[in-house]
Image (cartoon, rainbow, N blue to C red; front, top):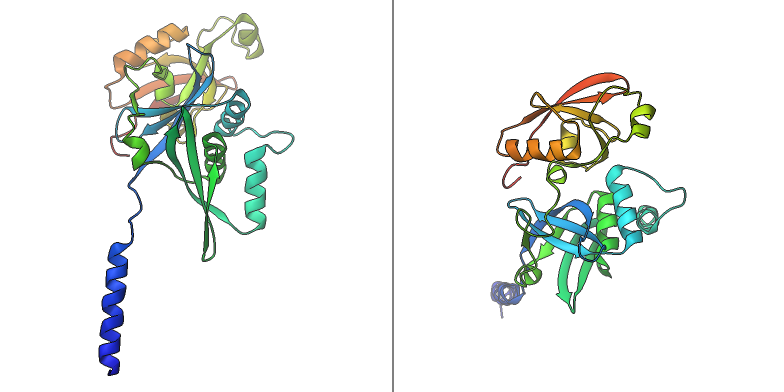
Length: 266
Protein backbone atom coordinates (compact mmCIF):
# COMPACT_ATOMS: atom_id res chain seq x y z
CA UNK A 1 0.00 0.00 0.00
CA UNK A 2 1.43 3.40 -1.04
CA UNK A 3 1.99 6.18 1.45
CA UNK A 4 -0.92 8.19 0.02
CA UNK A 5 -3.36 5.31 0.71
CA UNK A 6 -1.98 4.83 4.22
CA UNK A 7 -2.38 8.54 4.93
CA UNK A 8 -5.95 8.48 3.55
CA UNK A 9 -6.90 5.51 5.78
CA UNK A 10 -5.40 7.17 8.86
CA UNK A 11 -7.23 10.42 8.19
CA UNK A 12 -10.54 8.62 7.69
CA UNK A 13 -10.03 6.64 10.89
CA UNK A 14 -9.18 9.79 12.84
CA UNK A 15 -12.25 11.53 11.44
CA UNK A 16 -14.51 8.68 12.53
CA UNK A 17 -12.98 8.56 15.99
CA UNK A 18 -13.31 12.31 16.40
CA UNK A 19 -16.93 12.17 15.33
CA UNK A 20 -17.64 9.52 17.97
CA UNK A 21 -16.17 11.51 20.81
CA UNK A 22 -18.82 12.84 23.19
CA UNK A 23 -18.94 16.64 23.17
CA UNK A 24 -18.65 18.50 26.45
CA UNK A 25 -22.11 19.10 27.96
CA UNK A 26 -23.43 22.61 27.38
CA UNK A 27 -22.50 24.82 30.29
CA UNK A 28 -24.44 27.86 31.49
CA UNK A 29 -22.28 30.69 32.89
CA UNK A 30 -23.43 31.94 36.29
CA UNK A 31 -22.26 34.50 38.83
CA UNK A 32 -22.54 34.52 42.58
CA UNK A 33 -25.16 37.17 43.30
CA UNK A 34 -25.07 37.03 47.07
CA UNK A 35 -25.41 35.10 50.31
CA UNK A 36 -28.59 35.27 52.35
CA UNK A 37 -30.38 33.31 55.04
CA UNK A 38 -33.20 30.91 54.20
CA UNK A 39 -36.16 32.42 56.09
CA UNK A 40 -37.60 28.95 56.73
CA UNK A 41 -34.55 27.04 57.96
CA UNK A 42 -32.17 29.82 58.96
CA UNK A 43 -29.44 28.22 56.81
CA UNK A 44 -27.17 30.26 54.51
CA UNK A 45 -28.03 30.12 50.81
CA UNK A 46 -25.83 31.02 47.85
CA UNK A 47 -27.48 32.33 44.69
CA UNK A 48 -25.81 31.45 41.40
CA UNK A 49 -27.53 33.66 38.86
CA UNK A 50 -27.89 33.23 35.12
CA UNK A 51 -26.69 36.65 33.92
CA UNK A 52 -29.05 36.54 30.92
CA UNK A 53 -32.20 36.25 33.01
CA UNK A 54 -33.67 36.69 36.48
CA UNK A 55 -33.19 33.00 37.30
CA UNK A 56 -30.92 31.65 39.99
CA UNK A 57 -29.86 28.38 41.62
CA UNK A 58 -30.14 28.43 45.43
CA UNK A 59 -27.38 26.33 47.00
CA UNK A 60 -27.60 25.69 50.75
CA UNK A 61 -24.24 25.68 52.56
CA UNK A 62 -22.86 25.65 56.09
CA UNK A 63 -22.38 28.69 58.30
CA UNK A 64 -18.57 28.54 58.24
CA UNK A 65 -18.54 28.22 54.45
CA UNK A 66 -20.95 31.15 54.13
CA UNK A 67 -18.70 33.26 56.36
CA UNK A 68 -15.65 32.44 54.23
CA UNK A 69 -17.46 33.30 50.98
CA UNK A 70 -18.86 36.53 52.44
CA UNK A 71 -15.36 37.57 53.50
CA UNK A 72 -14.09 36.89 49.99
CA UNK A 73 -16.92 38.92 48.46
CA UNK A 74 -16.04 41.82 50.76
CA UNK A 75 -12.32 41.56 50.10
CA UNK A 76 -11.56 40.72 53.72
CA UNK A 77 -8.75 38.41 54.83
CA UNK A 78 -8.51 36.00 57.73
CA UNK A 79 -5.58 36.08 60.19
CA UNK A 80 -4.97 32.44 59.27
CA UNK A 81 -5.58 30.94 55.80
CA UNK A 82 -9.02 29.47 55.23
CA UNK A 83 -9.51 26.39 53.05
CA UNK A 84 -9.78 28.32 49.78
CA UNK A 85 -6.80 30.52 50.74
CA UNK A 86 -4.72 27.41 51.35
CA UNK A 87 -5.78 25.81 48.05
CA UNK A 88 -4.90 28.98 46.14
CA UNK A 89 -1.42 29.06 47.70
CA UNK A 90 -0.83 25.40 46.87
CA UNK A 91 -1.94 25.93 43.27
CA UNK A 92 0.37 28.94 42.95
CA UNK A 93 3.32 26.92 44.27
CA UNK A 94 2.57 24.14 41.75
CA UNK A 95 2.18 26.68 38.94
CA UNK A 96 -1.40 25.50 38.39
CA UNK A 97 -4.58 27.47 37.83
CA UNK A 98 -8.33 27.04 38.11
CA UNK A 99 -9.76 27.05 34.60
CA UNK A 100 -13.38 26.91 35.72
CA UNK A 101 -15.78 25.59 38.31
CA UNK A 102 -18.87 23.62 37.31
CA UNK A 103 -21.84 22.82 39.54
CA UNK A 104 -22.54 19.43 38.03
CA UNK A 105 -25.44 17.66 39.70
CA UNK A 106 -28.02 17.44 42.48
CA UNK A 107 -28.57 14.04 44.07
CA UNK A 108 -30.59 13.38 47.23
CA UNK A 109 -30.67 17.12 48.04
CA UNK A 110 -26.88 17.39 47.78
CA UNK A 111 -25.16 19.51 45.13
CA UNK A 112 -21.97 18.34 43.45
CA UNK A 113 -19.25 20.40 41.82
CA UNK A 114 -16.07 19.89 39.81
CA UNK A 115 -12.84 21.89 39.71
CA UNK A 116 -11.09 22.04 36.32
CA UNK A 117 -7.39 22.66 36.89
CA UNK A 118 -4.45 23.04 34.52
CA UNK A 119 -0.70 23.43 34.58
CA UNK A 120 1.05 23.75 31.26
CA UNK A 121 -0.33 20.98 29.07
CA UNK A 122 -1.62 18.92 31.99
CA UNK A 123 -5.26 19.09 33.08
CA UNK A 124 -7.20 17.66 36.00
CA UNK A 125 -10.79 17.39 37.16
CA UNK A 126 -11.30 17.34 40.93
CA UNK A 127 -14.52 16.51 42.75
CA UNK A 128 -15.48 19.26 45.23
CA UNK A 129 -18.19 20.58 47.48
CA UNK A 130 -19.89 23.54 45.77
CA UNK A 131 -19.07 25.88 48.68
CA UNK A 132 -15.33 25.12 48.47
CA UNK A 133 -15.37 25.31 44.67
CA UNK A 134 -17.20 28.67 44.65
CA UNK A 135 -14.92 30.17 47.31
CA UNK A 136 -11.86 29.09 45.31
CA UNK A 137 -13.36 30.44 42.08
CA UNK A 138 -13.86 33.82 43.75
CA UNK A 139 -10.30 33.76 45.09
CA UNK A 140 -8.85 32.86 41.69
CA UNK A 141 -11.33 34.96 39.67
CA UNK A 142 -12.29 31.84 37.72
CA UNK A 143 -15.58 31.51 35.81
CA UNK A 144 -18.43 29.42 37.21
CA UNK A 145 -20.94 27.31 35.30
CA UNK A 146 -23.97 25.08 35.79
CA UNK A 147 -24.06 21.81 33.83
CA UNK A 148 -26.77 20.95 31.31
CA UNK A 149 -27.72 17.94 33.46
CA UNK A 150 -28.37 20.19 36.44
CA UNK A 151 -30.28 22.72 34.34
CA UNK A 152 -32.65 19.99 33.20
CA UNK A 153 -33.48 19.08 36.79
CA UNK A 154 -35.42 22.31 37.26
CA UNK A 155 -33.21 23.77 40.00
CA UNK A 156 -33.53 27.36 38.78
CA UNK A 157 -36.01 29.66 40.49
CA UNK A 158 -37.36 33.05 39.44
CA UNK A 159 -35.60 35.49 41.74
CA UNK A 160 -38.37 38.05 41.36
CA UNK A 161 -41.16 35.86 42.74
CA UNK A 162 -39.42 33.08 44.66
CA UNK A 163 -39.59 32.98 48.46
CA UNK A 164 -35.79 32.93 48.19
CA UNK A 165 -35.75 36.14 46.18
CA UNK A 166 -32.77 38.32 46.96
CA UNK A 167 -33.49 41.58 48.75
CA UNK A 168 -33.88 44.39 46.23
CA UNK A 169 -30.62 46.09 47.25
CA UNK A 170 -28.59 42.90 46.71
CA UNK A 171 -29.81 42.77 43.13
CA UNK A 172 -28.06 46.13 42.74
CA UNK A 173 -24.90 44.71 44.31
CA UNK A 174 -24.89 45.80 47.93
CA UNK A 175 -26.26 45.05 51.41
CA UNK A 176 -27.28 47.66 53.97
CA UNK A 177 -28.54 48.14 57.50
CA UNK A 178 -30.31 50.98 59.29
CA UNK A 179 -28.11 53.42 61.16
CA UNK A 180 -28.29 52.90 64.89
CA UNK A 181 -27.52 55.77 67.31
CA UNK A 182 -24.15 54.15 68.04
CA UNK A 183 -23.26 53.97 64.33
CA UNK A 184 -24.44 57.53 63.79
CA UNK A 185 -22.09 58.71 66.51
CA UNK A 186 -19.21 56.54 65.27
CA UNK A 187 -19.43 57.96 61.74
CA UNK A 188 -19.94 61.51 63.00
CA UNK A 189 -23.34 61.79 61.35
CA UNK A 190 -25.28 63.45 64.16
CA UNK A 191 -28.43 65.01 62.77
CA UNK A 192 -28.10 63.10 59.47
CA UNK A 193 -30.07 60.12 58.19
CA UNK A 194 -29.27 57.26 55.84
CA UNK A 195 -28.45 53.56 55.60
CA UNK A 196 -25.02 51.95 56.05
CA UNK A 197 -23.55 49.83 53.24
CA UNK A 198 -22.33 46.68 54.99
CA UNK A 199 -21.28 44.79 51.85
CA UNK A 200 -20.49 45.67 48.23
CA UNK A 201 -20.56 42.64 45.95
CA UNK A 202 -17.56 42.18 43.68
CA UNK A 203 -18.19 43.26 40.07
CA UNK A 204 -21.79 44.23 40.88
CA UNK A 205 -23.52 47.48 39.87
CA UNK A 206 -22.64 49.14 43.20
CA UNK A 207 -18.92 48.35 42.96
CA UNK A 208 -18.80 49.46 39.33
CA UNK A 209 -20.42 52.74 40.41
CA UNK A 210 -17.61 53.27 42.94
CA UNK A 211 -19.61 52.61 46.11
CA UNK A 212 -17.69 51.15 49.06
CA UNK A 213 -18.40 49.22 52.21
CA UNK A 214 -18.93 51.78 54.99
CA UNK A 215 -20.59 54.38 52.77
CA UNK A 216 -23.77 55.90 54.20
CA UNK A 217 -26.39 56.25 51.47
CA UNK A 218 -28.77 59.13 52.17
CA UNK A 219 -30.16 60.29 48.81
CA UNK A 220 -31.46 58.40 45.78
CA UNK A 221 -32.76 60.21 42.69
CA UNK A 222 -33.25 63.26 44.87
CA UNK A 223 -35.41 61.35 47.36
CA UNK A 224 -34.20 61.06 50.97
CA UNK A 225 -33.33 57.58 52.21
CA UNK A 226 -33.68 57.41 55.98
CA UNK A 227 -34.26 53.67 56.45
CA UNK A 228 -34.00 50.29 54.77
CA UNK A 229 -37.72 50.51 54.01
CA UNK A 230 -37.19 53.84 52.22
CA UNK A 231 -34.34 52.37 50.19
CA UNK A 232 -36.28 49.35 48.98
CA UNK A 233 -39.28 51.49 48.14
CA UNK A 234 -37.21 53.78 45.91
CA UNK A 235 -35.36 50.87 44.29
CA UNK A 236 -38.63 49.13 43.42
CA UNK A 237 -39.99 52.36 41.97
CA UNK A 238 -36.86 53.03 39.93
CA UNK A 239 -36.05 49.42 38.96
CA UNK A 240 -36.81 50.00 35.27
CA UNK A 241 -34.65 53.13 35.05
CA UNK A 242 -31.52 53.26 32.92
CA UNK A 243 -29.57 54.39 35.97
CA UNK A 244 -30.13 55.64 39.52
CA UNK A 245 -28.24 58.62 40.97
CA UNK A 246 -27.24 58.19 44.59
CA UNK A 247 -25.37 60.26 47.15
CA UNK A 248 -23.41 58.89 50.07
CA UNK A 249 -21.43 60.18 53.03
CA UNK A 250 -17.81 59.00 52.99
CA UNK A 251 -15.09 60.20 55.35
CA UNK A 252 -16.96 63.39 56.13
CA UNK A 253 -17.61 64.20 52.46
CA UNK A 254 -20.56 63.79 50.12
CA UNK A 255 -19.90 61.52 47.12
CA UNK A 256 -22.20 61.13 44.11
CA UNK A 257 -22.47 57.93 42.07
CA UNK A 258 -24.66 56.46 39.37
CA UNK A 259 -25.96 52.88 39.66
CA UNK A 260 -26.57 51.07 36.41
CA UNK A 261 -28.39 47.71 36.32
CA UNK A 262 -26.88 44.63 34.72
CA UNK A 263 -27.69 44.25 31.05
CA UNK A 264 -29.40 41.20 29.62
CA UNK A 265 -26.79 38.75 28.40
CA UNK A 266 -23.95 40.63 30.10
